[in-house]
Image (cartoon, rainbow, N blue to C red; front, side):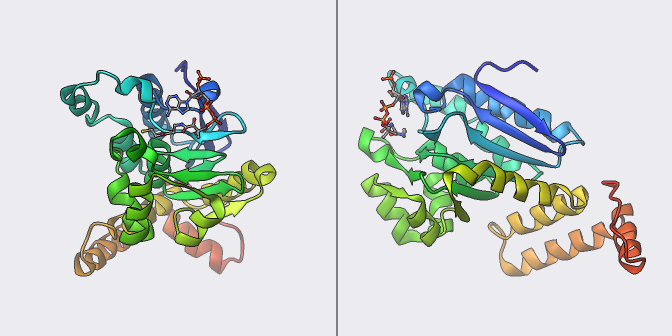
Amino acid sequence: MAYETILLERKGAVAVVRLNRPDKLNAMNAKLKEEVAQALGELEKDDGVHVAVITGVGDKAFVAGADINEFAGKTPIDQWRAYGHTSLYNVVDRFPKPLIAMINGYCLGGGCELAMACDIRIASDKAQLGQPEINIGIIPGGGGSQRLPRLVGLGKALELILTGDRIPASEALRIGLVDAVVSHAELEARTLELAEKIAAKSPIAVRFAKAAVKASANLPLEQGLRYEQSLFSAVFSTEDKEEGVKAFQEKRPPQWKGR
Ligand code: COA
């Protein structure tokens, strides 16, 4: 599919979605959000893609937020419609393969919410993160009020959301908002290294593992443990499980089939 506001690349079993409005610091307008959601739909169906990475084009920004210009005159019903089943945050949240946010600069508002909806966040040492919505008289609307406290705790989440302050990548790492900080020059190489490492595992086991871990955010421990047990039992039906065990016994690398 041809896209106008994003670039979609495949590097072996890793796909990279690049948000491409660098002159606007990759602020997400409706078209861009729609295209990222479409691209993820395409990648979900593509069995050759095992892991996806999301990043911004240019040296300055991952995403500087929703496109603020689109808020002028927007009605409550317009916004309500935008929250449809196929809207970006819902698609990201339900994407079954690992999704890595490669945070190459400003990661603000909807950009921070997009990164938080991803599974793993790797940031450049030049990145700055924050939820500055309060500064334009609104609040986070892409999951920020719910995901940020789950990652960093209530106090820090409230501090960030109520002040609108930006924090450097080092502070984001300290509070658990990102999982690693690497030098700006190495960001792409280090992120792709991680993506390729995951992409080389059994894709079916990776999907089961992601589903189990993500469920822990929503389920009480007892139900989470039962869910894990059903997935663990189900993974014993796969050819990859037989192959993995056999390869271990034969002291050779496994050849995954993804089924
Ligand atoms: N929506 C729409 N346009 C945006 C944008 C956003 N969220 N963030 C940046 N831009 C645009 C700017 O308007 C500017 O466009 P112009 O050149 O046509 O005037 C361009 O991107 C470059 O931004 P600029 O502000 O000149 O860069 P800077 O380096 O001086 O400042 C930021 C960078 C990120 C501090 C600043 O752009 C900013 O505060 N952006 C808004 C962040 C925000 O509040 N996000 C949450 C929205 S709910």
